[in-house]
Amino acid sequence: MIIMEEKIRTWLEQFKDKPAKEKIMIVLPYAAGIFLTVRIAELYRLCRGDFLAFIKNIQYIYKAFPPRFTTRDLLIGIPIGFFIVYAIRWQSRMHRKNTRLGEEYGSARWGTEQDIKPFIDEDPFNNIILSQTERLSMKARMPKFNLNRNKHVVVYGGSGSGKTYGFVKPNLYQCHSSYVLTDPKGTLLPETGNLFAKMGYNIYVLDTVDMKNSMHYNPFSYIKQPKDILTLSNVLYANLKPPDAGTPPDPFFDQAALLWLQATIGYLWYEAPPEEQNIPTLLEILEADDVREDDETYENAVDMLFAELEKKNPRHFAVKQRKKYKKAAGKTAKSILISVGSYLSPFDIPDVAELVAYDELKFDTYGDAGQKSILYVIISDTDTTYNFIPAILFTQMFNVLCYKADKEMGGKLKTPVQFILDEFANIGKIPGFKILIATIRSRLMSVIMMLQTQSQLKDNYKEAAETITGNCDSSIFLGGQEKSTLKDLEEMLGKETIDLWNNSETFSQSRSTGVNYNKTGRELKNIYELNTMDRDKCIVRISGLPPFFSNKYDPKTHPNYKYTADYDERNTFDFAKYRQKMKAKESVNIRFHKNDQYRIVM
Image (cartoon, rainbow, N blue to C red; front, side):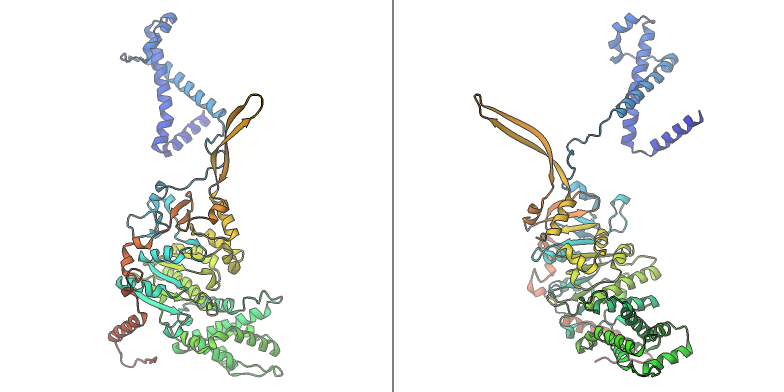
């Protein structure tokens, strides 16, 4: 009895949590069955137990004579009705077949307007534009939990498929976030800069092609905690090491080179004055850190600096790393320093040294409240020599903005920051990116990665490539011919069930024809169809939804298109003039204070 009560209680709790429509579908059969059996009991009573009279008047059960139920009718009808309905339902469950009509060979289908509608923000500017008809709201929390999607997007498209024109530009026109974007051709700045100037954005430019026209970027300015020293050392080493160097059989030299970087960067950050905290000073220390192979007791000027620091603080971070590095013998230490020198040699180029001498980018402010910013990172699409600079930049940005969100903003940036990384595979390697892309989402940062093929990502990130794309809830295929990309997309789209008609005709003494109807499965889009897809079309996939076969977005239909150089050449943005104007504005706002020291930069 107790077990039965518990079962009933459990059933009632489960019933309470069901949707209203499902509750009705459960209750209705029992109500109808009980009502019918009570009417039968009533009619049998009115016939005074005469079975023949009951059979003769059975049709009156369905007629609207006023029901006059007695307690006896209810006591007989309710349990019998409940038992009959329960038995029928139990019997149907026992013999139920696992049939999926119309889905025998696959249930894949194309998404519809109704599928995407709940994911689109009512404010048209607060969406990521995926295609002409598909959008994804930028809201961190949607009204219903099952509508939440992260804002990371991976875009695949071969050369000329419209990645910049049909995707990057429309999303820049939205102006809902602070933006950090790579500009491989250097055309986005003059074509879209006027829009952001009109919208009141702070505009920054890091130009690795024409460095004389670039703003300055000093990685040392963004070291906020000791962990950042390790991050900067790792990203310098990972991106400056020759790509064809491979993994050495003995990792000692790599580890020793990292120790030297950690010790020296740590010393500069902790002990050097602000104007000396930069990579040119790091190179000066490297030059002074000479080694004599035949004299293990020799102390150079750098050794003396660290010895003096050790006297003040034996447990200093920089001292610890230096002592580990110094365990190498003279000849070995010289080889290590030669390796470090070769890795850092790009910074010996005057333009590069000047670029990293001090900082103007202020990217730790991009998530602040009340002010949006945009950073154009201009890179060469033909020469990857200087692409280690964006890799260092992005690594630091992710870490610095996460740190600021956690320590100063309660876990979320006040202004969302969106990274639109065109030619993502060519900007160098971001250490720990597979972890970063999984964690920055909660801080209101999102990444849009533009790739030509899937294999591009694997070249840089090896096994982590699948983890990275797996953390993107949305992906777009704009067209292309690379086989592995097409094959994977074909599999991801799945199979649909289609009707198959076979016509047969037999020739003999008497001619006969026949038609055979069957069902079979086929890919929603096979490799050939994907390869020959119309250039105006794209395929949008969002986690948990069927794929969408849609038109690419036409930028000319966007309300902010009229502020761009594509609309009118008079809207072409002149960054040099803008920069002069901003410098003049800053000089007016400068307040000098007594006894303060200032450095004049020419």
